Image (cartoon, rainbow, N blue to C red):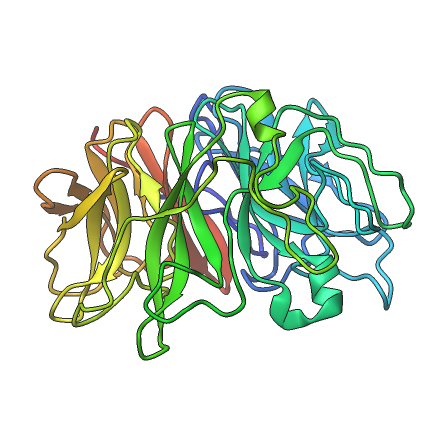
Amino acid sequence: MKQITFSPRNHQLTNINTWTPDSQWLAYDVRPSGASFTGETIERVNVKTGETEVIYRAEKGAHVGVVTVHPTDDQYVFIHGPENPDASWQYDFHHRRGVIAQNGQVKNLDAMDITAPFTPGALRGGSHVHVFSPDGHFVSFTYNDHVLHERDVALDLRNVGVAAPFGPVTPQGNHPREYAGTFWSVLISRTTPTPRPGSDEINRAYEEGWVGNNRIAFIGDTLSERGEKVPELFIVDLPEDEAGWKRAGDAPLEGTVENMPAPPAGVVQRRLTFTHANRYPGLVNVPRHWVRSNPQGSEIAFLMRDDKGIVQLWLIAPEGGEPRQLTHNQSHIQSAFNWHPSGEALGFVLDNRIACCDARSGEVRFLTSDHGNPPSGDAVVFSPDGRYVAWMEETVGFRQLWVTETGE
C-alpha cells in the first residue's frame, strides 16, 4: 500500500478510467471536496515516481473537474464550467460542458444551443461525468437541460446522453453563452416528470455504464404502485452508424421549448430489473455507484440489498433474466466499484479496506489492511494492466491518492 500524493490539498479521482493506457499515471482534479466545484486544474501523477504534471489550467474564472482518460490515446475528457461567470450564468448542473484535452490543446466535446429553433446534435444545457466507450470512439455523459430549467425546474430531469464522433456541430450563436462542439450529442434515455406508478416509466436516468461499445446501462427511478421511488436497472442499444445517430424518432433530437431532447430512432430503453416486490426494492443510491459491465460485455454489476438488508454486488445479463447475487458479505459494500480488466474480479471498499471478489464465486480477499483513515467510497479503480488499484484516503486533512498491487 503506497501513498503517491502528499500536497496539502485534495486530489479527486473520478469513478472510472482514471489511469493512462500505460498504467503509469493517474489523472485527477483538485476540487476542495467532492461536492464543491471550484478546482482550477486537471493534473496527473506518476505512480512510480510521484512526479506531477498539470494537464490543463482553467482561465477567466472557470472551474474544471471530473476527468477521465481515453483507453488508448493521450486524451483527457472532463467538465468545464463557464468562463466569466456572472449573476445570470454560473456553474450549475445545466451550465457546464465537456472538453477534451490532447497535446496541450482543448476542444469542446458538446455544442450548446439554447435559442429556438434548436440545433440537432447540440445540447441545450450541461453535460457531466464524461466516459469514453471501451474503443474510445464515443463518450457517455449525464445531462441537465437549461431550457426546461428556465421554464420550470421540475421539468429539468436528469438524463443520459452520448457524444458521437460525427460533428462538428455549430449553432447559430444567437446567445452569448452558446458554443460549438466537435461531437454530435444526443440523449439516449427518456424520462417523464410524472411516471405512472407500477410502470417502466422513469423520471431520472443516471449512474450509467458502457456495456461493450454499443450499449449503455443506467439506473432509472421508477414509482411503485404506492408511488414510492424504486431505482431499477435499464439498458439501451445504440445506433450502428452515423445515419442512425442523426435519425430522429417520434420527437426531435434537439427537443422543443416544451420538451426534452429525444433519443434517435430505434433507441428504446429496456428495463432489466423488476424489484418492486422485493423485501428491499431497488438498486441502492448509498453508497453512490455506477453500474458497470465486465470487459466482455456479458454481465452488468450493480449494488442492491439482500433479504437481510445488506448491500451486496449483483450481476445480470444485458438480455435480462434473474439477477444473481454475487457477494454474501456480513457487512455493507461501502463504495463504488469496478471490474478488474480481466473480467475475473471486482474491486470495492468493504470493512474499511480495499477488497476484491471473484466474479464467479463471490469469494472476497482483502488487498489492504490498517488504513489510517477509511478509503473514500467515491472511486476504486484498477490500472489497465490489472497490476494496481487506486483509491482516495484522507491524510492530514486532505484527500490523497493511494495505490496497492492486486497480485494479478
